[in-house]
Image 1 (cartoon, rainbow, N blue to C red):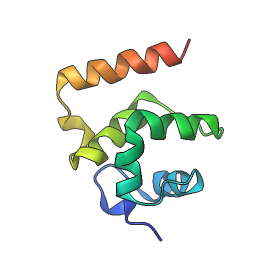
Image 2 (image 1 turned 45 degrees about the vertical axis):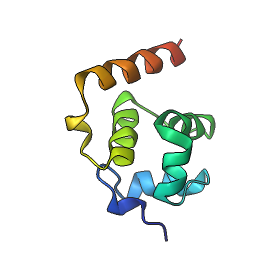
Image 3 (image 1 turned 180 degrees about the vertical axis):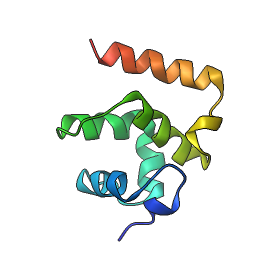
Length: 85
């Protein structure tokens, strides 16, 4: 099994989805980045939300997504909205 569920914001459900798209370690998640991982999940048919994007970013940084800076949340929200068009 992967070590992803040891990271903040990553429970067993998100971990299973990430592993299914080839992201089976925190190193791979960091390499893909939150946006890359989000895009892989979305392209594979998983339902994705802005909160998931925040969760992935927080996991990469090793913090709960609630503690992401306001600026980073706004950046991610802008990317999310652009991709939702």
